[in-house]
Image (tube, rainbow, N blue to C red; front, top):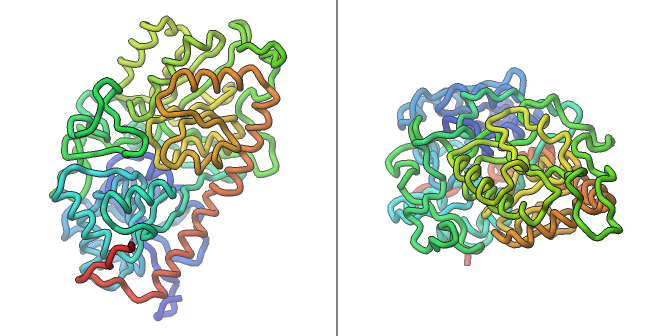
Length: 472
């Protein structure tokens, strides 16, 4: 209890105008919290805020109606939170909210970094670092993400807390339906630019599609990104970078309970003879699925590139984005267009996964991989690239196949071996679900945040004028 005898009050804030992966994780947190804290949600977009509040009946929610300092000051004076937690899709997001909360001195201020992105814009980098050093806590959603943010912004190793995102895995884990207006980031938009702007990437190799090596992490700059002087994100013609379509259970009626057998996927169906040593034939085609916005960072082109080596496999790409025409052209060029299905935007991803045999995540970078976690929770065997926080999710490859980033041959080999071995698919599916239940539930995530809030409330507030010295 606070000094006034009430429960400590926590304000969860998001500054985006469309539901993306970070907002899905925030919604999962809202739904998983207990009654220890009085929770409010707030943001600049009414549709997003209402969608988040729907995860918890009766939750107080607030819309700033703008991104300026006055609007945020009014919000904070009205709510009078003990803890302000900003949900950041990139490290430089929501600077006005963070600066305003720090100026009030009363609340403890926490930032959650969902994407370990760096910028080549020096003023933006310096502002991001100055704010981060003054916060009471910075959180990353994976150990890899924490290391990158610490290094990119010279915060010092070990300065970020790591709290993995979680997904609802219980029988009552319904998620509010996501309308196209709320999830428009997953829809194609000719004016929108990728969150990773290759035009400002100084070390991108044009021959590799414009991406750095696996250790570099995405580099972002002003081109197509939030203005350094603004409080948030691009305007309506440059939507946020992850769509609600990228989440396998958006709008579903819930997940199986912990004791139930997985309900998705034809895992274990005898569609291949493992003794034959070959891949399934065309009459018993396996279905692999990949969920996410259609964008080079998600690597759908790598999956399509693997299909010529997998004559008995069909690929279902669940999501939408500006990369769709290029992916269709690639499939036609490789002669596999009849085995590639692009579903477009949907908030009923579960319906597209019911006949799936293998979940594939060929991303060039993922700070964690929420869609992968949800597929694991559904009991699907998984093949994913060993990038970012993905090895953490798959426990170093012990509950799924890890392949090198961008390696079509390795991806094809891993898919082919699983497609030909129903018993291994069943085993990996069980192990994946057990891993998700042990480490990545919404309830576990919520308990971790509740512990963090108790920790920052018990400690003296961080110095607002003199930043914390970086840890060595």
